[in-house]
Length: 206
Length: 277
Image 1 (spheres, rainbow over the protein chains, first blue to last red):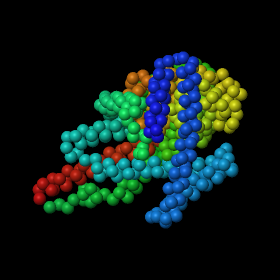
Image 2: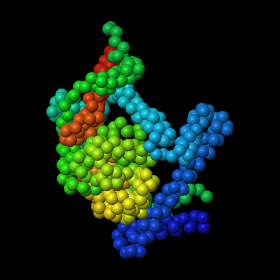
Image 3: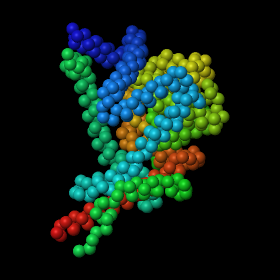
Image 4: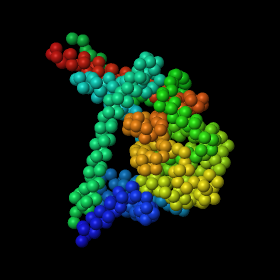
């Protein structure tokens, strides 16, 4: 029963969601709106489960003094401080919560993202090698895009931005389309397998 | 046999590369280079679509980005908001990512202030809703049910701008300002199911993901990266953060190409040297 009930629920809701897309009967519309409400409710509970799991994981590492436990402590302190500030001081303008967000989180995250430029430069120097024909093709396409997406490319030669656009619009888009169609077909096949109960890995063990 | 210089042996210390990159980025930001920018057809097309929107049309702008990419998406958000407010379009701001909420509100307010727009009448900020799919679908069913209140706790039924909005039919265009894949959900649900027009303003790295959708007409406009922002600023005749950032990006790209060339020269010289031994 533990496995059969979820499979039946999945089948009923799967078929319903599929049917409601094509049927505009008020009964289906009302049912669909209820499902949307439930999705929000379930998400909030999933968020609670996530927060609890985060708490347990880090507390366990701290209590066992595992390697680098100080970082777990920092993560927990951050969570606790933000929850405390949010609940007791509010999240409105000029609140401590927003101050921490604007002056700590935003600069720190932007810094992490910006570091990519430095690592990309170093990696390009070390790794972008014309070793064989394929790597030469990759190198030429890469250089065209790098130059074609900045004003400098236009200054060097008017054909560079055009060539970069061609790379993006023809070979790159062809590959991307192939991948997207593959993903689409795969999603339909997997969804059908889940709805009819062939694919049951989402139930976990037991 | 001549001794190869250190940089030819592929041993250029990464700290030197980091310093060079820092100089390449900082120099153009301090000393303006003013490199000329050319407007691409895709940005021009979207700009013209925005121009063709009727006065007082309602535009839904979703701030779907996180703090990490804020420096890249902020010029995009500024450009589109400047355009909306200068053309008297009504703006409804939402966020489908928690982090985008505070940042979206900040950008929206700053631009509204520049154009002396009134909250509740010219623009509204509704804040964050969890569960992307459910929110996008629910907006097509009952606007007031999914957003009964705005970000500040005021009922959306009491705000002049949102009072008469029932669903997507009352919104002219959706614009997702994003750094990730949330536009896929907008395409799958708002465009496919409700036949709503969508434009995507995204980071340069994400742009290739959306080109097939622009080409197929599933999205009506695509503006990407600092370059897209700079082009939009040119069309608006208001050069700003995008144009300034493009100089720095140009120099950084030039440095990367020089490093690639240098690395390859070293690689081939080492290879030749190896084959002689």
